[in-house]
Length: 409
Image 1 (cartoon, rainbow, N blue to C red):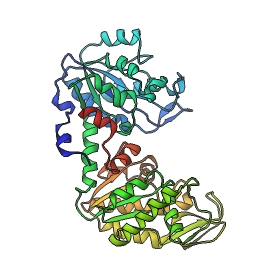
Image 2 (image 1 turned 120 degrees about the vertical axis):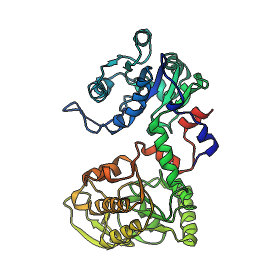
Image 3 (image 1 turned 45 degrees about the horizontal axis):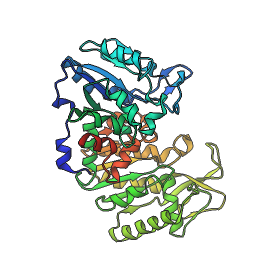
């Protein structure tokens, strides 16, 4: 995945003593919120950041937490204020959390200056400034000037060239590191990327193939089984001459995409490690109560669409999963939010849990995929749940994340 010599040289929070120091910690508190009840729906990302925060506090350091929330597109808005995080974070850490109504400016400097050892200040949403997503150097400098040591604990956005991820580290010299969550994410990904116990099975689902086509190109070389489900399967089936009816397929597939698909099929024909569903549950409209029936994935009638994998495919995929020692899963294999088309995804989740119980290492990431696990109440029975969908997928392309490069350089 990464240059192993460099990875071993990346400093973590354990390489620093934070006593009397101000740590700028880039966390990802972009958590789902119910805006009607004004409550946090899932606090996983907050919980995962706690060990790094506690390490710095135990050193008698000071912490300035920076994060984004939602997509305010450079405008201040109450809906996306990080202030909602304060009560929960205070409760988890059992200490008061200070909050700044802005993330740059004189008032912020004053708030930071007044921090005592073992105190935490959470700054307002970075994305209230368009400069954050633009990777603006001046904005990054203003943030960097608030502290002595930079800590990247936001794996889920470390593939983005944003000011708080890829630019801030440039101002810290060798006073920069990754947090314990970042380290764990990297170690778990390394268990998948060619270093896992064989057989290695990678299951990719979801609607769009464009975001994962380059991943398939890379994993062909080391994965023993590549299972393709959900909307991702249909472009392949169509290229093989199958009839996919009106099943979901990206409209903007260009000649380059088609060429890559063809190349993947040719390579996997030799390696025999690419697997598609055999049968699918089809519907005559996109809703939970549509008429449905089971057909071969290659013979979907016109006017019908595939919305889930069917019994033969479920058994086929689950048998492969049960024989695996290393498993990666991203993307549901059907429209699991419709109860009548959720059996395939729920069955996959159970199969991965069973394989994990038998000693397999399982890594699962992506919001929808984790949501499907939670439907079955088995999210705690997986080896590791990744906090980063996009960042995790970028890593599978064998690319060093922007946020990691910034720490190494």
